[in-house]
Picture (tube, rainbow, N blue to C red):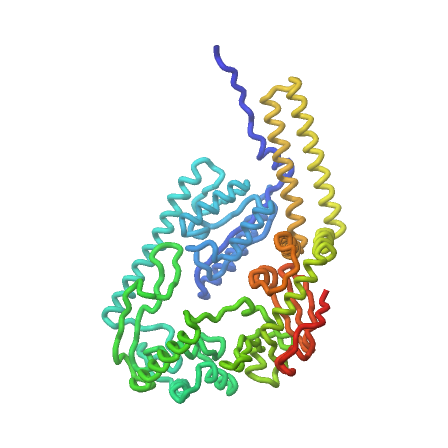
Length: 547
């Protein structure tokens, strides 16, 4: 007996067409360099695609996403590309027009992954040069081939460039592009001394040999407004340590300190023994003598050993409060310091970096580590005792505040439409169960209802996401979750809880400490002047009333 087969026609495109008569189209453009010629190309692409999209009768112009001076080998480094993907996820784009596969991406994996994601969202990508539409049946196979060719071209260019550089490394003809502080290049690309900067280099080495630390030397250079090295934002101990260990100042040159990975996405890494390095002795005129360079290295080695012995383990400079403490006066960050080292009353304090450099620029005094932690403990105990009146009410208020009146009405309308479609779906199910409707027709109508609901939910979610307070709502929900699993009053400071719930700690005058939590809520504790290092140094947090 022959089986009866009924074809159920696809309804997705038909339903979407009814809901959105015109497709929302955007363009994606990219140029790979900063040159003037390429900038002209970038502007020309913007003008061309705006006119191109506006000419299409059934398209609505949804904007242009353009990355300037970005590489096509790595999608995640392109901000505008990522923003375009988010707009597609929010249901605001139906068609993406781009010049060619190579403009979209030169990494096969990234390209196919992005296209599949867009295809699942119902978004079409049209490649103008190849006349290729991602919604066609053979598109993925063709795109895989074209993307692979584009990737192969990028890797081939990179390989040729790498071979050329390696050859020049080996025969000593390589000319470095970024010269170290104290040097410049002559017209042949050879290193020559820049005397004004070289004077500062000699001073740095001399001060270090005379017993000054890198931090003190950097502070003195900053105070005297000495121009910084070309790649550095300011004089600091890290910049100084790099200079003190650089063999370029004794006339030697090390090539291939960094390298670029051989396959996409190309990533620049510091060479820690993965690749050969090339040492050229007496390559150029030295700024300091070899004896001075040797003595500096000996001092560096000695200080590393001493620091290791004091700590008993590998030196670490990161603590849970690092980078979190902000000065209420100048806005700068605080630095961890030890005072009374080796004494029975040895203490840890946090000091404003601006105040350390210049006490007139910022008058904020240091605060003891234990005072901050005691203030946090007091704040936590108040919060955990009153969270239903603070966090739960805050969460409800945020959800109510994140939409304005017009958007709230629109969301309410969309919710009503979704409920109606849901009811229709239930009615259809009851009808087919009673045998009043053919199963094939039921599936077709059910699919149409599901697609309509999906589109309406996208519109609703887009409205909700566009109205802010997402960070505050998510943070408040996380805080409530933390309290759920840690509901008790604490007797001791908990580093793990602090790390997960506090975003910033703001230190102000008169012993005021404000904790800015991960949901942007600020809770203040008053410790009193006696709790500050600038007071008598023996106070405790006795009257915290931040909530």
